[in-house]
Length: 302
Image 1 (spheres, rainbow, N blue to C red):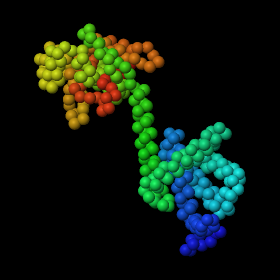
Image 2: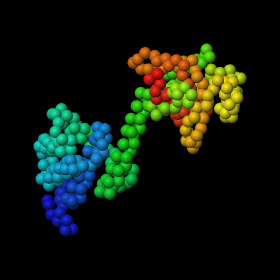
Image 3: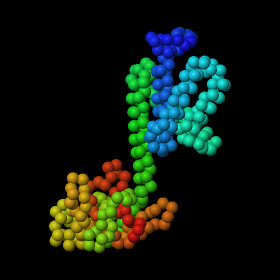
């Protein structure tokens, strides 16, 4: 039954008890829910998070239909309700994403329902841990901001991780008749070069490079890295390689020219670089230990 509740339009639903629903609040909550579901769909579809007139119109259409269902009581006629809901969902997807094929539209509708189930589950979880009894507009707005922020961060980190995995390669370094193997990360931003030859420099952690050195050579390298004495650099055939690090605009790496670097590229033949410059780094290159070698961005152009 439709009437006035405190001078506001409302619906009185009779059943096991009496429940009053304010139409303006009901519309606002459904509108925000639809908008949130569409934005979550955009995240899954890797689209930009943009609230435009298309998404607003689609969300409003869905909220308007939900109001009609409650007012008319058509939800009691299950088959008609399902057909109408699928039809309205199709209109919403048409408004939100434009014209597409039948298969594309079916995919959008399925994505809308999956996103809706996901959203409802998260909201129920948040409702449970916060102890809130009813979903208010403020609760919905705060939840929407939290959900979109966390999902965007999660997918961004996942994308970076997948991209990083594609740029990680097994590497074998040969120097003075000895070899060492490690994991290399191709950093396109690493444009470090040796100033005399102008050749690219790959950076390697000292603890990995030291495996090819004798105890005496390790002691000399360690001293050279910390004292940077020109005389010692000359004896060890090292070069000063200028680079920038966090907190230091002007710093130097001891550079050594190794005999060969072998890179295992997935789906391709092994790449041999021949003689190449390495910058010896005395700290960790990766915070999680994922790699010990930072490949020069132009390493495959040699």
